[in-house]
Image (cartoon, rainbow, N blue to C red; front, side, top):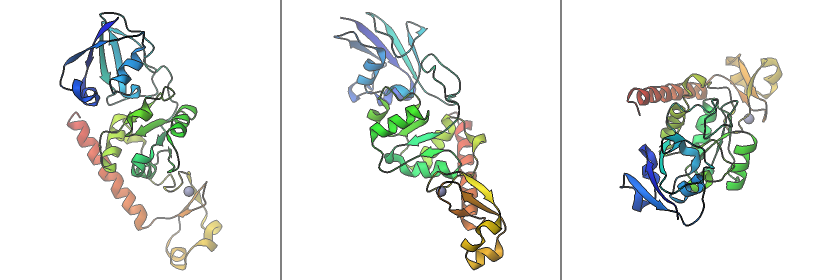
Length: 256
Ligand SMILES: [Zn+2]
């Protein structure tokens, strides 16, 4: 019967089952041959939030089968996490940053779209569907649900620790170092479609008289045909982006 020592670093320890949280290292006695992924998840930690795993000082992947007297160290995903670079744990890289967001953090999805990030979100999506989209469309899955992230097909994902949506947004921007990729007013907030510039003439008959009179520059959502123009709504978004960037920079300075 293999007996293994686990050392969990940083915030991973907070995610362990209550009885283990206060211990620096924990002893695990396995009754069967098990992969390291299965054992770590049985202790309460979903695999996507692990950044690095070593056994007796050697880096290993999630399929490693635990041996008697192994000493396992697990470190969390920390900023800047770069999903474009292959790692031992995740050789499958992403070719762009895009998200699929769980219903338990719906407001975060709208905030991400506001900043121009391609974000799939639908109130009707259940866990199976969210995991499938993350795998087939190579998207980062964002959730507050541990069991969803434990699904094997989820490669890139993150368990949000903040409760409020603004805090969650800052957490994501900071973790994946997305500050320079923010493109406000480039995506439709209700539907996630891309916004493209359009001639005023093309949309003229759909405009209210005052909008027609005072505005010259228009964008159209490729997907739902909604028209966008500069105005108080856009000014609010620009202010919002400034607030986000300020908070992200403060986070970086504090080394969080
Ligand atoms: Zn739209």
